[in-house]
Image (cartoon, rainbow, N blue to C red; front, side, top):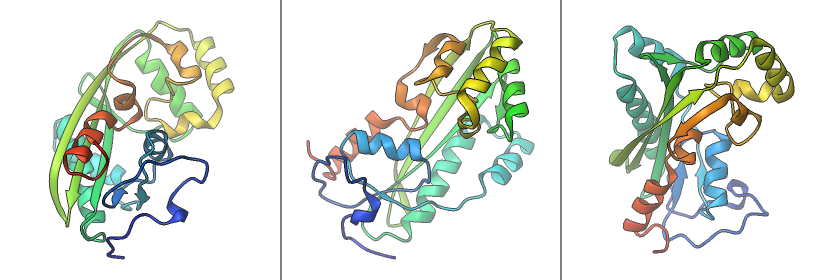
Length: 219
């Protein structure tokens, strides 16, 4: 799969208007949210998921008491490195996000009951979203960045949790926190400190800065 050609049409969204790029950019992720970030910014990226068993790796690192920031950074690098070996001369972007409350890392809820338990644990308290991004080139890391957002939930009732989950539906299972701040989930919060992109799982502005520095996108 080694190539230096731009992403093909099947890797783009037809209605999106893209700005020109000067070298291939690959997103080592199957996340639709991260894909939409680049689409919205007009940056065409090829999509190549790394097929990493994140849950097993996180469980192992939790057992070894690896700090959450290092967990996110390690997984972002692993994804980018794995995919970078398949794309010659491309800049490959890997990202990972962990949710931490009192040094405990939370995983994505497995079902709605698990999502309800998450929201009960977060109620009236603060937690952090740590988003790490690593860019690799020809199989080696060349840039990395970690950003943190702090979110404070309001003291909502169990009845509100049930009403929220019923209205939001299974989409909450795709988020580690069982919420989307760009939608109904916004009503769960008292305060949010951190940029929108970090909360969504990829601190996009520093990534775009690096891509400009490398001449991959226009400056």
